[in-house]
Length: 138
Image 1 (cartoon, one colour):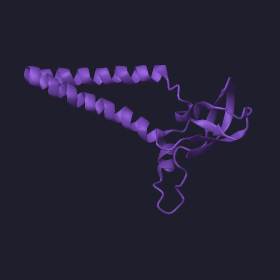
Image 2 (cartoon, helix red, strand yellow):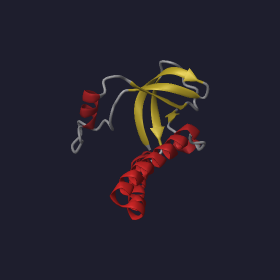
Image 3 (spheres, helix red, strand yellow):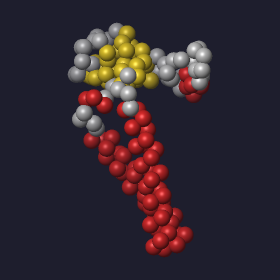
Image 4 (cartoon, helix red, strand yellow):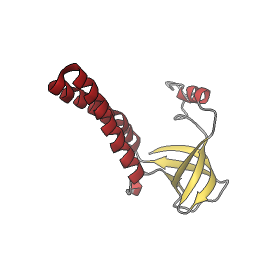
């Protein structure tokens, strides 16, 4: 499980909006820490707020721990980066075979557009599986 501390800002039915405290894993001061938390603070000063499941019905202002299952972030990142890259190469290859260099350019743009539409549709549809959503540990 991956967890991070935060504070509940607002309640929204079975969800809560949680303002997160850290911008990394929080192991910057430990030996072998990468310092990502320090870099995150440099580029993102505004508090980050996320909508997460609130199974324990925590209240506004309460300090909580937000948890997400192992592998969910990795799979999401692979999909968000891998699918567009694969679509770019596939579109360029198909376009190149059909119409040379100009076809490769148009195919690459078409592949990226298809990937963007697919990811956007998946985002709007949302994940009905509650196991893949972050939640508040109680």
